[in-house]
Amino acid sequence: MSRRSLAALLPLAFAAPAAAGRHDPEWIGFRQRFMAPEGRVVDTGNGNVSHTEGQGWALLFAVHFDDRASFDRILGWTRRNLQRRGDALFSWRWRPNVAQPVDDPNNATDGDIYIAWALLRGAARWGDPGLRALAVAIGRDLLRLLWRDVAGQGVLLPGLNGFETATQVVVNPSYFVFPAYAALAEAVPDPRWQRLTTDALAVLRVARFGRWGLPPDWLSLPRAGGRPDLPTRWPPRFSFDAVRVPLLLAWGGHATEPAVGAAGAFWAAPTMPAWADLRTDAVAEYPASGGVRAIAALVGNARPVPLPPVRGAADYYAASLGLLVALACADRGLPTVLSPA
Image 1 (cartoon, rainbow, N blue to C red):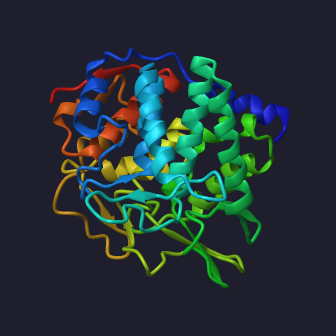
Image 2: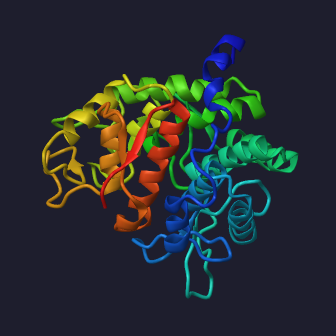
């Protein structure tokens, strides 16, 4: 990465000043509803499992709200229960009330990125070099184990196993965590972090499907080159994963990208469906959550951005999306307002 390219990204590399402290009602509400005392973040809409996505997001929230005690509990539980052997990455899921809570050692790359990013933000906020060292180890192993060059485009596999064949590599566009790459590039200098941004932007400009030209939850990249396609293993939808794509683009400073505008146009419908089928153009019969509505407000240039209260969120995921929008607004210097429950 050139010095000029890095300098352009540095405002997002470190934690913005916390919008509020550890006693903020929204953070207290999140902890009370979705975090066990030992630091396990509970996905209440998905069988009460825990996963690295949720642990990483909660670490980011704890840094934002300057809550070191919660941060340490979340990190401690994550390392005790999800740390993989032989590398610095984490197994992606923990299931309660079973003999073997971690029944799949595979990682989830987005979760690893969020954990590393939160560690770097925590190290900067609290002056703790130990947190930075943990993040550096994760960043190195992300590049060492998950980097692939697919027809000249650099990507990180979504997980160590199950996402590549002799002819294709499957990626999840919601794992393109644009706002984290600058922090990782500063901590683990390597030109591939910049390539992850430039190449992912190039992919998302062509990987748009259906009536609205939306990014999909999952995407197949041909090793021989050519247009990306929708893989057959997953429903061909703009759905619960892909709703994060416009958020991460806007958060990373790419709010004018076509995928952001397409999502904004889709969400402009009065009912704002929860998902769209990218082959048939069918839409969900139920509306998007308040968290998705917050993303829509952000990318739709609502100012101030209305944030849904945690107490009104249907589940962990909706609440998390709302808090992620709050963090994005803090990083981008955008005003917010708490909307009615």
